Image 1 (spheres, helix red, strand yellow):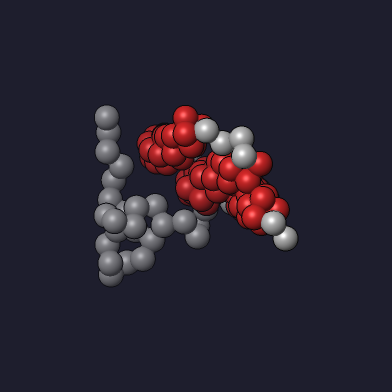
Image 2: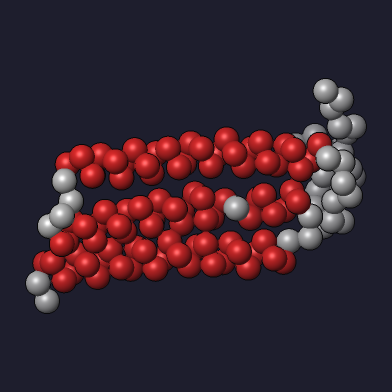
Length: 129
């Protein structure tokens, strides 16, 4: 196996692994019972799946000999931007889902950070902004 074939194989493995993160995330979102849990389920796809797909595409291009320095820089910037944007977006989505005051699934702790440790599942009043 030549180095080009090994690079193409490594790129393919990264692409398939990233795609599997999206598949597992999609299945988890179908099983989630409330909006807050669905937003939480997005983390594997946006935090690991998307960077793996971008990296896999870059490795595949490198193996073919088509990757330029500019393309490599674009891949690094795309990974960094996806991590920053997905963090901010998931925070905003979770906040919006929480503030809709829809009933949460009983298995979801409403506010784990502000909950009374002596009474699991209890939470302080929601902020009124």
